[in-house]
Image 1 (cartoon, helix red, strand yellow):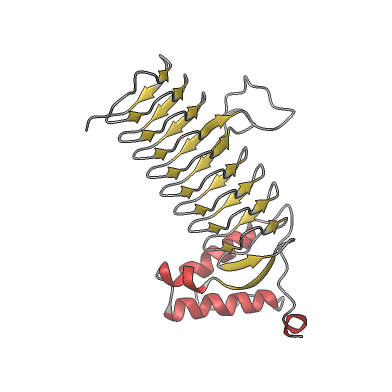
Image 2: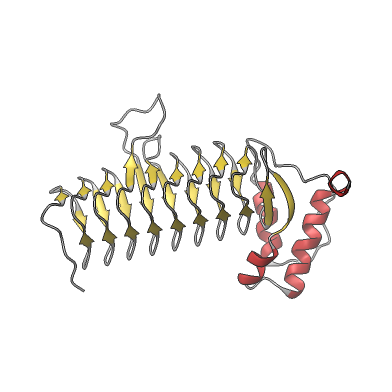
Length: 260
């Protein structure tokens, strides 16, 4: 595999580029950066120190990765990182900030797609196959699971958790945790129904889907999950709930009020 480095690109001596990496015009890659094989860095993209990136990532023009945390207490000398997996697409204007505590990282998983001007704040964790639509943002320390969709302009408060397979309506305001498997909308956000399309696309159907549906009904009614069939989804949901929450969990819409 053969990459190309545009003559106007700036690549610091301490940067490590894998085989077949392509770097576009006026891109800046600073020291303490590692870029995996087959990745593409677009024109005017800036990759600041302490970014580790896996294979086959595409960074579009004007993205800025590894910026200092927007945290007044942060010391730029702290040894913190951004760590990005494989096969991600980071579109124009995406920003991802470093973590704040020495030895920690802001993390993005594999096969994620971050559309233009989306932002991942310091100390966040994003799973695999997750999509950020244009302008979606995460405050610091937020956690996002696998196969989540954040609609355009979604704003997520710091320390919130968004469970796997959730789908967030555009412009939703997320000030508490989002349950896995759910669709959320509004400002402030509320759960309103299962993300059926997302679950079926992920191969969660039949009895497994019925178990997820039963579990969510019980949570809506403040009932125990005891006695439900053990499935991978229910195991994940129980573990997610057991982690505890710093901000509480978003409420469900009032079905009866909504019906009026």
